[in-house]
Amino acid sequence: DADVTQTPRNRITKTGKRIMLECSQTKGHDRMYWYRQDPGLGLRLIYYSFDVKDINKGEISDGYSVSRQAQAKFSLSLESAIPNQTALYFCATSGTELVNNEQFFGPGTRLTVL
Amino acid sequence: GENVEQHPSTLSVQEGDSAVIKCTYSDSASNYFPWYKQELGKGPQLIIDIRSNVGEKKDQRIAVTLNKTAKHFSLHITETQPEDSAVYFCAARRGNEKLTFGTGTRLTIIP
Image (tube, rainbow over the protein chains, first blue to last red):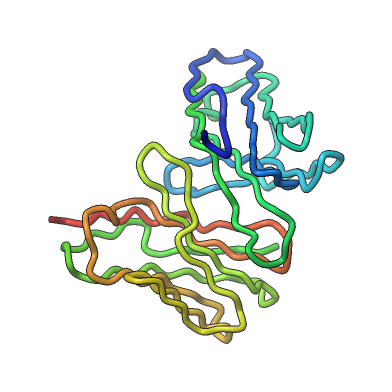
């Protein structure tokens, strides 16, 4: 089974709808992240959480919110989706060690907002 | 905050030739520099990393070099094969903070 799972894998929605993307991990990591990938713009950080009680904005948090329901679960919400939020979204996890602190990514969610 | 620039954005090389991707970073306190490979339809995966206390690291056909003075680091892939075709991301991090990624390089190996 995959260590980092994302649901749904693909979603098409309409402008103004509320959307939730979910991420679960079995790696036992404290740290979780949400990224957005657009062509030519790389991976941009939306929100990150260093533990269950910690939530931080990334570089492009406007229009998004998150919930860290448990160590293993981190959800991303689009309160009112707009077409320029059409993108590939990745969840990632990492440990807290200073060394061997690899970031593990999920398979991604392709979101299309019409 | 940290800013990472990556070049080129696309790169095509003949199978068997070498490929080089370069990144520069802005925060002189950054001390960890990983490279990720993203295959089609998948999430990025770590392929090699380097810390600021070394200048070069090799793992079979891939190597990374780091020039702390100039604040740049590079990924070198030798004897390229079709399975090396992917998007590659560099990243930088200070201590145990969050990673900052470059904008990615799409590498195409021409058979």
